[in-house]
Image 1 (tube, rainbow, N blue to C red):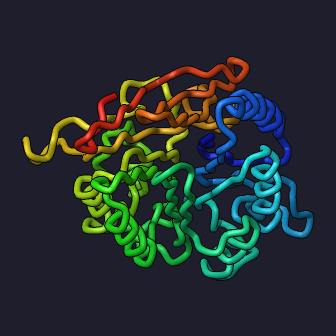
Image 2 (tube, rainbow, N blue to C red):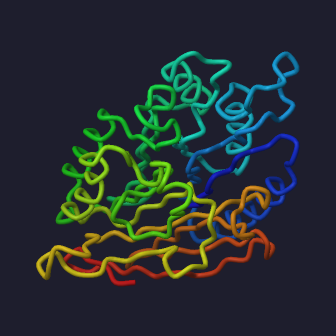
Length: 317
């Protein structure tokens, strides 16, 4: 499974996307010698939140969230030679000049990417699911439009899904959201996302913000959770966080059986630390590997973590 962080496509600056795709085509070709069961996941924020000379009639229109943005992103994501899934980030309903409501903008997002629902679930191996949750509120946000908000319907759907696929029956679930859940322990930007109330999923609602980590702690079928949003590289000690203790040993820190993973960006112009990276998940009979695809090093693959399933549904990394 290939994982792309915030694309922020700018039609005026496509070089890094062309190079990145070529690198990924080589990765999928190489990995395809071991398995044909491949997929691509985009973590959202598909377009640049600027005027990108795309609308002569409205030179002030933002590119992000527009029809042309999502159609261009869909064409790009569909050109990797493997099926793709996508969830929305905080910029994907930003077509405020074209669409008057979040509902209309979301309908365009789903139509452009061939989605029946904002969320997704894909089976990638025996009792192994990819699950994505989508931010669906922008104009109607109570506090900040750029808060990554998973709506109540999706939360209920996700909770039922993990209940229906228990670790005791051998299920493994990989979750994808634009922002991480609070409690993940991943590196964040205090001066930007934290202070502006858009750092974690459902940041401004204490109960819903806490809900995600509580589900992780309760349902040990959740094995990994990938997010983007911060435009930070994958080389920091807290770019990946691991389960630390068994729940029976104490209340905190407790990340269930889940590994949380920060995903970088492909284009140099959107990177906050100069890194240009994506993630690759490799499954195997014992568990899975988390790898970095380094776009500044000709797509070189680096092994970051090896996760092994144990009989009691815990993992070690």
